Image 1 (tube, rainbow, N blue to C red):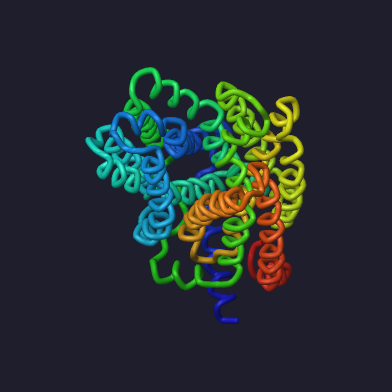
Image 2 (tube, one colour):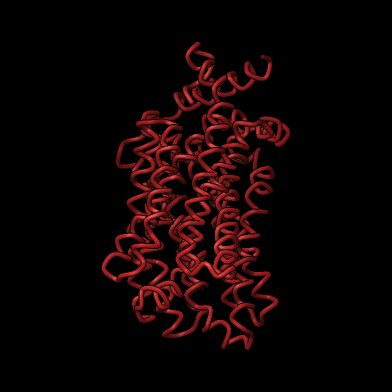
Length: 420
């Protein structure tokens, strides 16, 4: 009971701070969301471009392509480690300061990647570049919700995530082309420039005094270590793995199953990016309409899409729509990001940042399970069935998460805390 009262007090203080914040014009809110999404665009471009430039990097550094794949894993490890660590270290800093600092950090990490003289230094540079990834998205989501009306929190978070989706459609192909035409180093240098541009725009449009009250690390850790938070993170870490299971093995599936040439792959990636954009937009709307129940709807949708994928992959005419639908699974990200704001209590920064650690766990789990199925002889399209199984498993975790959050919802009905 004491814990519930403490969390309720914190949430009321946060609400009071939001009420005391200057009323922003719709145009200013739009500019803030655009600046935050611009950071997401930089991060999304950097995260995925290495996948398209594996061969170029391998030739330049005189290593094998699988070794370059370890650089991708190093980035993901940086995300998993950096999100909670930087969130805790930055608990007492204002969110505007953190956003600027994380983007500066990201610019440096990608510049180091562009200048890496050898394979070992590239590994280290990619790890460093991954560190601010999750922390930036977590803070950006909190700021987006803070500057938007309460009934549009999910919509605002979805707009921030939109930057990551647009990167899949535009940023990644552009950087890949640049890397192939000139040098892979130019791709990472481009990301560094975008990060610096994000800093400049954020400093210009985000008011210096805008932001929720600062907390301390011990309070963040106390409220973070609760079942509703961990189960929400588990829903994403498991339920989202299916999308990565399919995405990781998409090029060989298209070549060996669908029967297309390698030139078809960029078109398929663009279809995935288009679906991801639709998912980012839909996810925020779904949360504003259904709350945490939107996660169950998305996991059921994901199960159906992934079960249909193996059949659709047999023909070029059906595989593109199927890949687009797989991309829409990204709607789960803004849903869970928004839900964590409701259940995290005083652990807002840590929970929001850790959401991206959870999704990078899914990024590791999905390809690993899909690879096991392929190695066992089940075929390239078995990734769809593996993904459907993880979506169902994520739905089971969701049911536990919903049950754990029920006391908070009852308290909300009694006026003790905001609705979850």
